[in-house]
Length: 82
Image 1: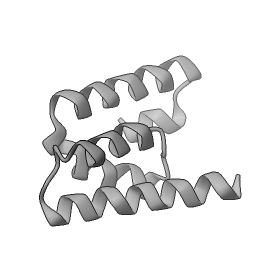
Image 2: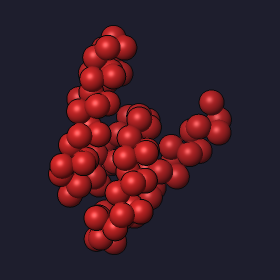
Image 3: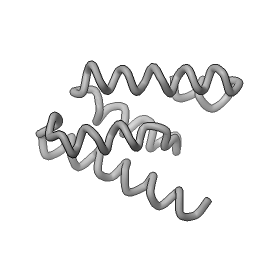
């Protein structure tokens, strides 16, 4: 999905963003995997969803929280340079 997000048209990209948000909402245990993959592709569209998960303490494993926190830090850094 990350690859399609980069090369698809804006409608496809928006649909993928929505689907990823829904995945995180219904399967929060996938958040660290999603964060890692999207960070590798420099796709920051899920920062709000990730932030919500961290604040709600739904994701409680240290490694998962660290991965998500890293994604959020990189997303913030990217937003400051753009």
